[in-house]
Amino acid sequence: MQIDHLRQRLRALGAKPLHEQRVLRDWIQAQPHDQGRRRAEDFLPLPVREVLPALDAELQGMLKLLSSHPGADGSARLLVGLHDGQTVESVLLPRDGLCVSSQVGCAVGCQFCMTGRDGLIRQVTSGEIVAQVVLARTLRPVKKVVFMGMGEPAHNLNNVMEAIDLLGTEGNIGHKNLVFSTVGDPRAFERLPQGRVKPALALSLHTTKRELREQLLPRAPRLTPRELVDFGESYARLTGYPVQYQWTLMEGVNDGADEMDGIVDLLKGKYAVLNMIPYNTIDDLPFRRPSWEKARAIAAALHERGVLTKLRDSAGQDVEGGCGQLRARAAKGKVIAIRAA
Image (cartoon, rainbow, N blue to C red; front, side):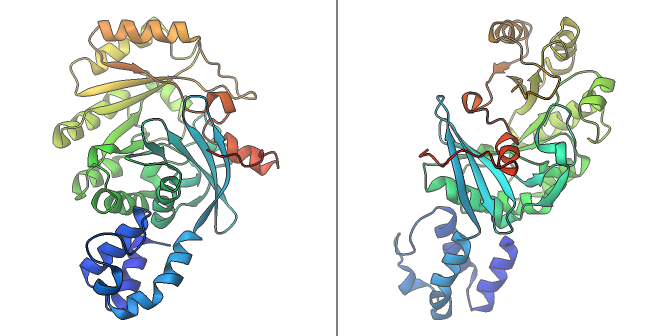
């Protein structure tokens, strides 16, 4: 289900742009068609009204909640089933946020990530991306959407940008509260400024060393950390939103004094914030999570040296639900029974 295909179907039934907007707005905001100043029966063309029940059922059946895993921090990791039997993960975040997936699997192959271990299986359609938001809104309010779940959004750019456009126009979500996360694909830097909805940008940095970054992110575009920051700075100045640089902190890998000096050299004076996230340990991978005390000391030291640094924790630590882990357990038949979020 592509959003553009849905628009075409509505137009074929005689829908005008205002009618399209109404049907899409009702769907994305998870509200009934009789809500608002104009009731559907008084506003929508008869052919559109006649197909609404079937269309609503089709949209609702695009995906289903397979399991919910609430965390003590107020988050909830959701395992979501797609129509073809594939699964992705969404995460309800504290403070009305939602993390969505843009691919089943991932081709980047980050060495510390569970999602990319099986490679890319398929793209998630624009409709399936929006449907993750709709599903989440049946559980709690969603006022922010981050594209930081399974997949590399820049590798599914058309679907992701189509979803972002709808979320930012009809979804009642502020543009700066739509966050496009990428390892740094030049195609994304070309495309993002052209959209009528310009999301905030999050860039996966993880190290200031070119060689180490190529090892950790083996199939990411071969941009140096400085080139990545230069692209980010240009977009930040264009949109007026600071770039969020993502740094997965791993014991003995990227937590040394040399990396901290490199961060100051790269980011001091930039329109940016560094999100430092201690690694979510996966048993059969060699990377380890540093202590919270060490992570806090590093973040404080960077802040004192002029780099705005926020120490964050990956949602769902207590349910072992780091991105890709729920899907991996489901593939092995170990998903626990559904629990209320």
